Amino acid sequence: MALVTVCRAFVHPGLLQNSADFDRMKTNIAAGNQPWVAGYEKLLNSGFATTTYQPNPAPTIYRGSDGVNAENYGQLYVDVGAAYVLSLLWAITGESQWGDAAVRVLDAWSSTLVALGGDTDQYLAAGIYGYEFCQSAEIMRGYSGWTGFDQFKDMILNVFYVKINGWFVGHENWASYSSGVYPNWDLCLIAGGMSIGVLVDNETIYNQAVDWFYNGTGNGQINHAIPFVYFYDNEWSAQPMEAGRDQGHTTLNIALLGVIGQTSWNQDLNLFGYNGSLIWAAAEYVAKYNLGYDVPYTDYNAWPIELPTISNSSRGNIRPIWELLYNHYGVLQDYNVTWTKQYRDLVVSDGGGAEGGSGDYGTDSGGYDQLGWGTLLYTLEAS
Image 1 (cartoon, rainbow, N blue to C red):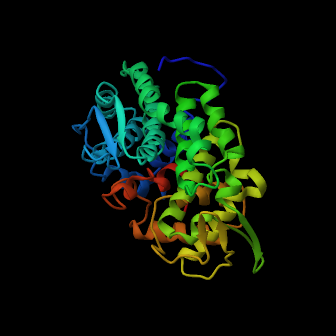
Image 2: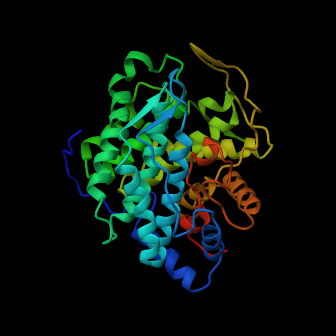
């Protein structure tokens, strides 16, 4: 795919982190302030925080069985997690040893990867690893030692965006609102499309993804993904569709909605506040239930999916997603985040004082579905 650029005034860096975020981190680390120091030490203790890290790229990444090729997508998500750690360390320290290590990973993949394959799970790979890989490239675009930025943009368009665009364009034929495809598919592809649009300065790609959030025909359209809103026990909350499926996918949806909201916020669009701050209400609902409390539940019945009761499968699922949501809604916006804060506190305690990142929450794909490191990255006030 040729790189056709349709420019708007995108903010750079402007995906999950912007320049003000990095200034805040650097200032507080230098001053020895908590919890930023604890978050930074957590990052430094990551197994990926090594200047000699060696990537393991492949020409084709397979997720899901095509009946011929073995799955190898673990190679990708591990290196994506590593690239993010190394990019963050460069942005915080300014040291070329970290910058060189980060771009070594980015260049290895952009010079090697030509396709995604497997079954329909390849779309999950396109969305999740597409949005995650863009984070490192968006940070490293400011590194004078990186000469491979254009090559990376070509790869992200030709390998990842091709799949994302195919999903959006062909969606009504096989994965529409009534087809039985759960919201996490759409949500990861929305996150991927938005991230790619910003990275390559293409307003058309960015707006395609945002429009799917507002108006898409799939279950990831925001009002399909979160169909029921409650005022119960003097609290607002909202029931995600997948709450009746299992809590692993439900918390994944909350993670992806956090990425979508944060990316939009850094580009002067407030998807966090859409439709009465539906993302906030859903986060409160999911946090409360996964902390062990009862929540209201409405039978979800939209053929061919019927979810008559809330699921306790994977209840208490730990993902590094709550610092982002707590700090945006609770600190920046001063919302009532009673349950989001409690779940944030649980995850931070579980992490020894700071939210960890990829690899800290399982070595399978679920452990890498979110990049994490939220205590360092999103904390807005001292503990």
